[in-house]
Length: 225
Ligand code: SAH
Image 1 (cartoon, helix red, strand yellow):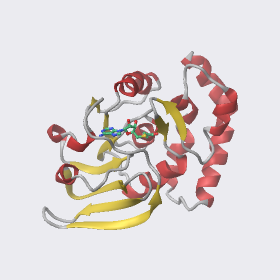
Image 2 (tube, helix red, strand yellow):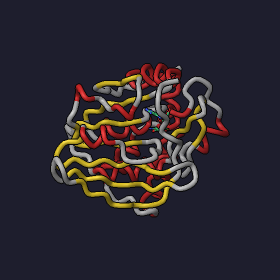
Image 3 (tube, protein in one colour):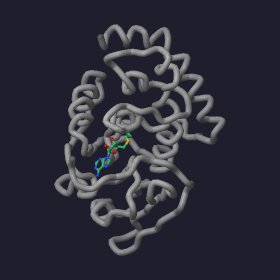
């Protein structure tokens, strides 16, 4: 099945991705490495790789978040591009992602040659994505089933942390696990009002927080289900 869809990818979806990248450029994404990565990652395979439904697949390359089951979403591609651009990924960076979901953002980071550690709290999604990423050739350093609020202390420090669900405030434990000069991009707020924050750890005691833009993410939930 995957091989079949890969073949379709050659003919059908590459054009859609080129168009998506043009739209991202128009919307202000200027980092060519991020755009190149998003040109490569077959987003439609992260949306629904078992039952390819053409009508919905059409929407997967538009500037929209889509439901992926288990009450969760595949992030809007503009949001993925913006968050990735803001953390300025260097090859080899050790990056912690909170909220693996379908693994699309994870794949974009791996395409940028980062070493990615990612945490997901929903078992169903965790199991599905744990199979999907390697099947598509994406080598993750570690996929962890657990609570993102706790981070992954055994693997810290991380040069970058990318949070893809909205937390009520900046989790202290994640700041602790950030390297000095490391940056974290995180949506903070409730269901109605959220802001994307860029957090830079200047020193052990000094953290700079810059508000980037209003945003709309699913909530970052505490405790596993
Ligand atoms: N990165 C995904 C976006 C997933 S949506 C993408 O590229 O599309 C956010 C994800 O965060 C959901 O899968 C949700 O289950 C997960 N999540 C919510 N609270 C969490 C927590 N405390 N720890 C880890 N993951 C969490």
